[in-house]
Length: 91
Image 1 (tube, helix red, strand yellow):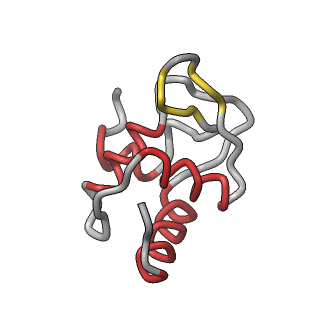
Image 2 (cartoon, rainbow, N blue to C red):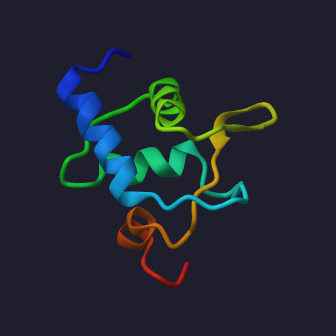
């Protein structure tokens, strides 16, 4: 999937503002969850998994494979604003 420069900038800004880095991989909050949070945000638009993985890496995140699962895990806090907005505090 090819993003326009505006879409790329929107997504990288959203990642910077809405995801909090941690040192530990949370295997439950994978790219499927991140995509959903982004797509449902006011600035969101459809993303495929490969595009999100590439842009997460562009932003300095290192993916962790979940075996045969096509989704990747990242070092992101469950207290990230994106997750709290989408799921609430008590998930």
